[in-house]
Amino acid sequence: MTPQAAYDELIKKCKEISVLGSAASILHWDQETYMPKNGVGHRSEQIGLIARMCHEQFVDPKIGELISAAEDSDLTKDPESEAAANLREIRHAYDKETKLPKDLVEALAKTTAQATPAWAEARKKSDFSEFLPWFEKVLDLTLQKAEAFGYEGEPYNALLDIYEPGATVEQVETAFDGLRKELVPLVQAIADARKRPDESIVTRSFDVDKQKIFGESVAAAMGYDFNAGRLDITTHPFCTGIGPGDTRILTRYNPNRLNDALFGTMHEAGHALYEMGLEKEKHFGTPMGESVSLGIHESQSRMWENQVGRSKDFWVYFLPQAQRIFRESLGDVSLDDFYGAINTVKPSYIRVEADEATYNLHIMLRFELERAMTKKEIKPKDMAGEWNKRFKEYLGIEVDKDANGVLQDVHWSSGLIGYFPTYALGNLYAAQFFAQAKKDLPGLQEDFQHGNFSRLLDWLRKNIHHHGQRYRANVLCEKVTGEPLSHKPLMDYMKAKYGEIYGI
Ligand code: ZN
Image (cartoon, rainbow, N blue to C red; front, side):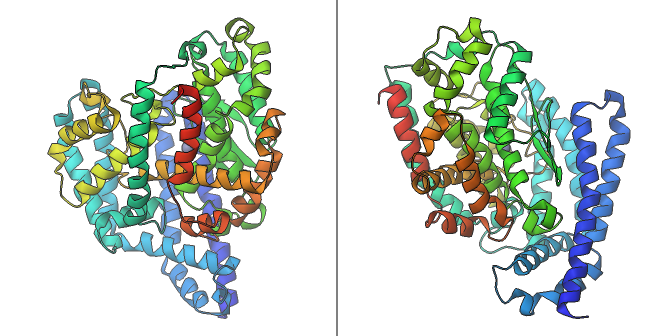
């Protein structure tokens, strides 16, 4: 078989597996939106069966033979070519999936399936000791997983690589260290500031039907194509790229808080624009038609949510529209007051409710704890105490109970250790990309004042979306911005923004 024939066969198989996998995506979407409650048992069987079929087809030794027959050939001579990128990433995924012993996969699935409800119960009672035995088991199996994958340096590298391929602990640590040094004092200065925005403006009454109309008009202005997607309601919002021409977003509404659905919708629409910008017609089911990493995906959602949606320029255009829709609640509000209200910074316990500035501190705390735990420098039993100690150092508040501390996130019970850093990496990449977009596109923010986002979207498509997985995240960052990932663009952006809002 020629390398080209092997490659063609491999791509055909990968596309078939992805088509099958996308059927599970639609089942999952249905489960989170319209499925009747009692359908859950059968639904998990359906999704489980498809996942197993996809896995079995992908780890078939035949796939390994096709990769081997294609990878050391003229096809990969140019490492940036489509074929080279596809082969590099298919090899990466294949090695990962085939390295895990079957027993370990099953033990992990079984343990996390029990650990998750145990965590939910422990959180309800706010009792970490009840979750501890499960936490120890999950950690032990996760470390076995890291050993099976293999790593350089420390086990955390193997775990990080699952979610952010190619990223290393050293890279993350460098970026986070720089960020911490400047962010902790900034959050402190904000806490001490005399000038304070009035957050109550966004906690007035906002009719849910009207919020939906407004949210849809914002998503459409961003470039979200409702002929290739839809917006529905769910409890835990997400975006799902089902296939070419079908990328759906979900949100939830709070009648007494404008921010939740509005910025939540912008966030998910930002993820969706990335999915819509991938060249799926041509590359669906192959790495060239897929997003780079969770960090890069998050950079797209955060940029639309924060750099665009929480900017004053954006509200020059959208506040008058919001005032027409929510006349009673926003009719009397000035642009500056509204801008301050949507950008209030207030240290709080819960990560998912955190503002733009303190959010990254929540992530850095988890990264440090996870890393120390995988190096066995912290034992699971000491986690609650360690958490509370560092939380006080970073956010300046005393954790009152485990439910508001170490037990707040589902990740550890579901075996997602190594995942958290991608959230903060997303914020760092977002700021660095946006700073570059402003350089490349003079007058970009004036566009926002006219409700025009097409130059930004075109720039993102050309520089990021169209490449699929041609480049790993760190390489992409250097290609687009000329610099490796740094905390500086994010800190420059936050210092300027909060300096104005808080007069510091
Ligand atoms: Zn996101």
